[in-house]
Length: 131
Image (cartoon, rainbow, N blue to C red; front, side, top):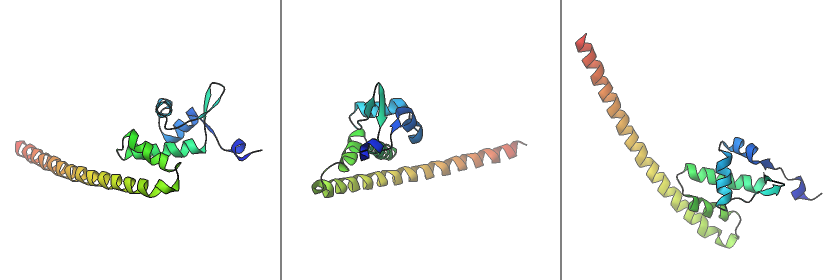
């Protein structure tokens, strides 16, 4: 028996549940060419490679990356090592930009939260005056 015959596989439903996404999401990523599940009759059968690619894609999406950026990252793991340095450099640059954007959003959220607390305190004070 070959290694590929004993490799763990998942149905679309199993993998969707494990990853916390819908089956429609997995089918969309397949339609975009990001994963290539095997077929067992009419059913999609996802292997270890597809699962790893989907985990990377979903992480990239959580980071705010586009599908094109996610494709570049997941393709890095399938590509030749000669381009790995360029791809890792590009990934690090994108991660730096994402980090900077998240820090800005975090600062904005802190300011907004401070405003909410200030307005709530003023409302409490005014309610106390009315009593």
